[in-house]
Length: 453
Image (cartoon, rainbow, N blue to C red; front, top):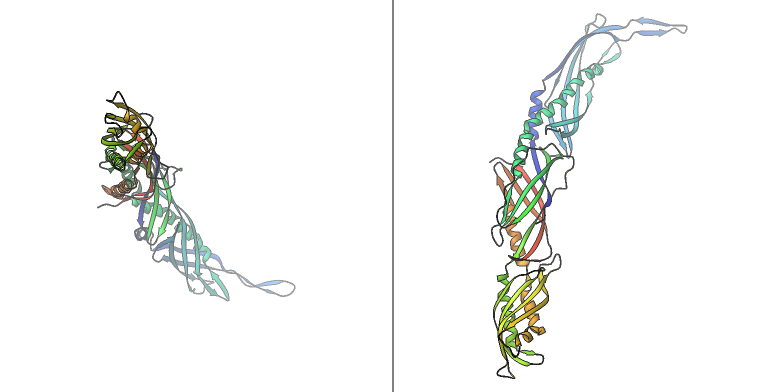
């Protein structure tokens, strides 16, 4: 049956609490210390005498010393935004201001790193962060009527701290062992799944082709990385096909299809199911009475019916019959009539009809070929066509149910394949050696999740 392109979702979930603890462990409590001399802590004061400005106090130098510590790292976000929040607290002392003992200033800031995650060519997570911070209480003191702030000095020290956050996040994400998981998922994806055990046996073989990164979302306290595997789904009827040999994990592909699994399954009606239906239709007609043109009323008996496939996409129907004209005791015939018909259905309809019923007759009567006349009768042909008609709807529903049970949730080692059928549509009927064959196109959504026992 035709191969179908499918894209299976491969979610990888990281616990934000684990990431948070990892970043917290990597970030020292004391972010930096300050101990330096400034030549100009307090600007000189001048007095304007009208003809000139006179300096009344000189520039005053000082020594600043202090420590900046941090609080607990928090990781959160929403949708495709990942946010790392780091509260910091500064305690800075100003000493030896013009020989005068100094004061101590405190300040607080909130550091935020906001950004997005991607993966490199070897499936290692990486992060691109936009780093920013806000002083909620800028550190500063009032000396000799002037306000001295130390945000510039703190800003200089903050930059490497923010850069370290950007480096540490991918390293913590690497603890997800993404590549190792994906290599296992990739191998498990080369799967052969039995959709139906009998009537007929049906197998679906999955042939992965590409794997791509589909983004991520922050959902509550989870970071869900979404990967998508492009594959061909191949349907086989009959014996189990040979398993495919897994290939090496490919690099991320930039071109990945829309999520969804697509495959064909066959609905098959054995010709044996049609034979008694045709026989009953003909016997009901005989019980009502048959009046042949040019011959008059006849008594007809219909025996064994045989149905099988023939050429030109048609089916052959063999009917053993005995017919006797009531107007003549010697006008009788017995033999096999062979008819052929074209099975037909509208796309999307499970109701099959028989069109263009034709026949050829072979009898034991050299005088009157009553069988030819019998099967030329429109009512007899209509009964044969009605008997060949078949409603596939019950078989259709039964097979879809079997498929849903077969692939709804399936465990392969540490991975679980979940499939949900979202749509089915049948195609045109075809006469095959095994029976009337109706292809059904199935669409759904599938995911492979890492879930160790």
